[in-house]
Length: 307
Image 1: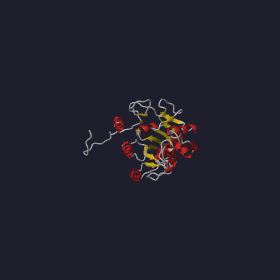
Image 2: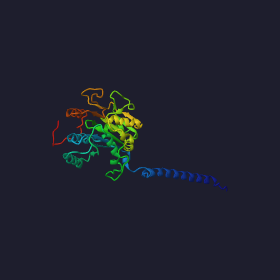
Image 3: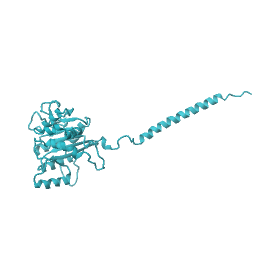
Image 4: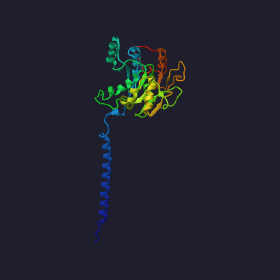
């Protein structure tokens, strides 16, 4: 009787074993990918704030402007910023000189904690802006958040704004988000007819710089030796002489003066707006807030009837 060869059986067995081993390797690698994806990567920052955009809007004003500050708190406090952005609004002025200021401003600080009092004598063109920017690193570096985290930089951008400027916070955030976070100088180019941010300087209605420029101002001799003169022009001189602010962005015509009276710096209100300047009276503020439907988020209630 003929005996069947076992060689085909061994070949089939070896092929089956090889196939099974390959299957195990593929299965293990797939699960390894899934497992690694489910675990936090310890080499990456665990501070979610690192991905946020942090902006400080500093409104330069005067100690006695109580009504204006209260009004601006309403204007900025009723704007909800988009996710991933933190915008702080602070009011900035020099040392208090009167007894009523010491009481009333102290009450404001206790209630709102949104005031910076600089160690200077109140002035317009003799170094207030220089003192402000020089003081910021000492004020905010190493400041902890409510969660105990020390973010750095404390703010990616600092905006110096006038107290007659209406800043639409989310429009500002959307404009800044894609821009560089270093060596940035951003705003409305002066003179009004110019569109070249490298030839001239940014208007004081509201210009923005990145935090590294703030730290440079803090440590540089250039701002210390050149403080007097129209402060926004002086700031532009610092940028030019030190060859700083190489990432320059002209925000015209999303930033502009109120259209009445008409001028080369103004145009009609429109939707593509970041900031409106020269709101010198309540009528102009009301017209501006109405145009942008600022109170649209008012919820219906039995407590009031506002048609």
